[in-house]
Image (cartoon, rainbow, N blue to C red; front, side, top):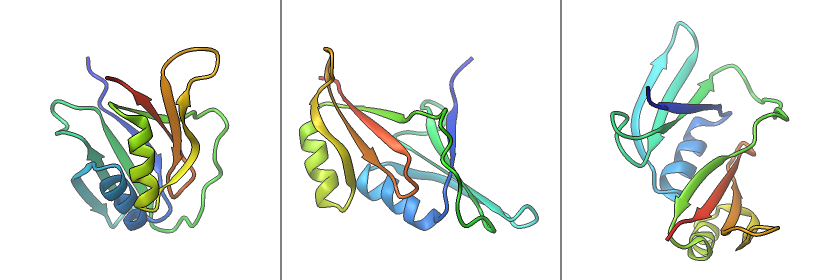
Length: 127
């Protein structure tokens, strides 16, 4: 068994694709329209689906907004320098909602970024 992907619903697919590819440097792996179902699936990630866990962005064409559930936490991405990542994300127009710094009560350096739909992305420093 292998963890394949996480799916989130997005209200503006192009805006979300721009966010995940240009701000986070992911690649658009595939995009499929389902006209009969009136939705599009787009898969983004840091490597191909055969070897990496990816993010599925689901855009339901007729849905203008979603209620953010209170059970979902966040997406986590590991990288070598969270401080630099926050600078780069801010420079590209991304929204850092918890600046880089040590995790409260001990632990490594983390930060949180918010995507266009309000989903949180935790950045975790991994040397």
